[in-house]
Structure formats: structure tokens, C-alpha cells
Length: 363
Ligand code: ATP
Image 1 (tube, rainbow, N blue to C red):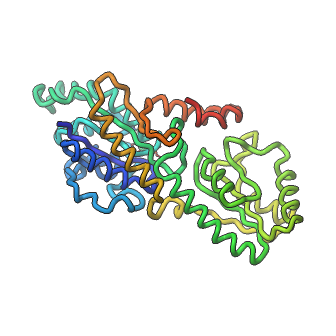
Image 2 (cartoon, rainbow, N blue to C red; image 1 turned 120 degrees about the vertical axis):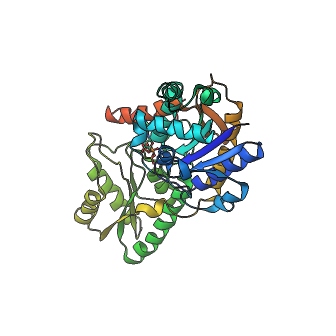
Image 3 (cartoon, helix red, strand yellow; image 1 turned 90 degrees about the vertical axis):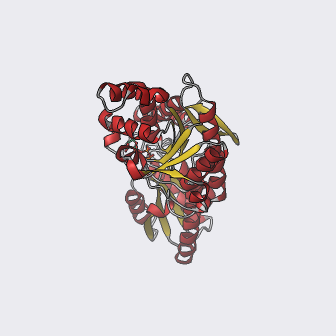
């Protein structure tokens, strides 16, 4: 019977707790033993009480909780082999032979590295005398399964990451609130949304809130964007619009990769269009609060599938990441998904924006 641990790592997102709940309960329902590792990889490195056996009732109510109730962290020690060696020792101590990680591309890269290094880590534990050969016999192979938890929806190979629709919903509500006051005073608002190098949140927020102009990193505006934006906004005002909303992704830039900041946009709207303009940076409200129904569903179905993937894995199976593609839960090759994700950033760096736009959907 497998002993399966789950951890959350990197930036938090709504639905991570729901994913932990699903992994714990599917593990128990399959007759296996469930563990939660607290504070991401730091908990694996620290061991002891940071790795707790979980029972059915330990995750009661977690489906509707925001953030991650087992904590998350960025762990420097896990980036280096000695940290991963300690983590391996702690896992063997608890008898854990499979790990489900819910995090972003960094966390999943670390997970795959851990898996590929695992046999040599176990070897080193024996050769250094930390473990006896018979103690590690059952731990020659480590199963890793990835779940993508991120508000940014920035991983290739999946249509949605756990948390992105909750964040979009929060952004939508926030812009609705801003709309009401903008309309009253006939103001313009420049709204900065999260997403780092990915424009999904900004693009979807713009579409769902009827923004006048949107800036995203994958599809920067033309060289004459300042003039173009002002012309469009003047046209909208001439058509009778009493408010103006411009959404700027935090990673927005022009075609020469010069950052486009909300302040630059505000100055243009004030000086060239003559609008009373304010900047609102939505910040961490975009990450907080309970997960929306879609994220609860995504986290639950994917958590269940992650445990099934662990139970069906062979030592030859490459580490999978659980994805949502055209409304179906599917397993994809984890490292291939990360490679495609990294390619998008490379396309942007090379100013190949057509490929960047296609990149996240590429197979
Ligand atoms: P987010 O998208 O929210 O930033 P992320 O998972 O990409 O999430 P990172 O900060 O990149 O976040 O990674 C989280 C943790 O994963 C790191 O602090 C580190 O412990 C581990 N990690 C990341 N990359 C590696 C790597 N190449 N090797 C080993 N561990 C890694």
C-alpha cells in the first residue's frame, strides 16, 4: 500500500486547499496512507512534525477555503542537492514513496529533479551510513505527480490552472466596483492586474469587464500605441461612454520590450485625452478569498486523478502533470509542459510575439 504525501509550493492560489483535501481523501479511499507536508519543500527538508499523517476529518471543510491551509514557502535549501538529500532522508523516515506537488512551474521543475535524482540520493544515504541498505530497499523509486496551482494560468498544456478563475472573478468584481465610481465622475481608471509574464488574467479581465484597452506581454501594442490608445479612447468618449477602463498586465511591455507601466498610461490619458485619471493596483485581493465553483471542481477532480496516477505509475512512467484540456482531466508529461511554458518566455525575449501567442496552447 502506497504512502502518499501532498504539498503546496510557490505562490498560493485559491483551490490549493481543495486540492490537498482531494488528494488526502482519494488516498484514504484507495486504502493508502496520506501525509501532508507543511510549508512546501521547507517542510520536507525540516521533516519531523512538518510531515503529518492525515485522516479523513483533518481536511473537513477545506474545499471552500482560500489559499493553502498547509502553508507554502520558497525554499532555498531544496534548490541544492544537500537540501534534497535531507528531504529524501525525512521521507524515508516517514515511509513516504510518492509525492503530489501543487505549485507553479518552479515547484514542478524541482519535483522532477528530485525524482530523477532520487536513486542517487538513496545511494548516498546508504554510502554515508545515514541509512542501512535494507531500510531503503522499498524506496528505490519515487513517484511524483504535479498539479498546477497558480492564479496566473501560465502553464502550457492545461486550459486552466487551479486558482485562475477565482482570481479572474475577484478582478471582475473589483472592476465592477470601480466602474460605478468611474461612471459617476466620468473618470478613467488604469487597472494593474497580476499575471507576471502571462497576460491571461489581464486579457480575460478586459474582455469580461468591457475594457477600452488592454496591455498584455504576449501581444504588445504597435510602435504608435500611445496615439492609437488615445484615439480609441477619444472615440469611445465621443460615442457617449462616461467612463474609461484600461487594464495593464503587470508584465506589460512594448514591442521593444520596454515596460509599459500604469503610470505611463495614466499620464497619457490625463495629458493627451484630458481625462481625470486614477491608477488602481488590485494587488493581493486577486489571490485571496474562497475558490470559485470552477476551481473547487478543478482541484477536486485533479486531486483524485493525481492519486490514481500515483497508483498506476511504473518506474518507467515519466512524471505526469494533471491538466484540463477541452473540459477533460488528462495526464501530460510534466517536463514537456514546463518546456513549452519556458518557450513562451523565450519567444517574448526574442520578440517573436506570434509564436508567444500560440505557445501556451501548443502541444
Ligand atoms: P509561482 O508560479 O507562484 O512562482 P513556482 O512554483 O514557480 O510558483 P518558485 O519560487 O519558482 O515558485 O519555486 C518554489 C520552490 O520550488 C522554490 O523555492 C524551491 O524550493 C523549489 N524549486 C524551484 N525551482 C527548483 C529547481 N530548479 N530545483 C529544485 N527546486 C526548485
